[in-house]
Length: 170
Image (tube, rainbow, N blue to C red; front, side):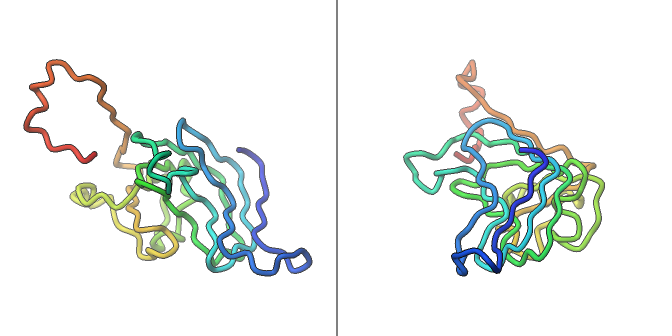
């Protein structure tokens, strides 16, 4: 999605109550890019971005992490959630130019960043910090440009005995 304006609520159009509205809902699978997106007037109880469409249903969730690339994002009059991660919360959001997360996440400015769910093992690096605003950022962690967060998948590892004692979170 590129060059888009998303308006959560207007004063002239019904309904007046837009609780639960979402600006963008990402698909369950594949990689996606958002560039030059403008969010306007998203009040409390709305989401600018929600990940993983349908993943609240355990029969539809995906076991892989979606990679989402974001750049040139602006917010005006947005008091609702910037991000809501649906389902298992395995998405990786790459903030290419810092506009998605700068200031709004924890008050710091970054050239670029990676946002992911609160995985405690990422906090061993001081370049990764939890959000200071859990309600707007859905209990996520941000890592600055010095840290590379990547999706890793295993499919039929051989020999499987190499992974017998390995601890994996399913």
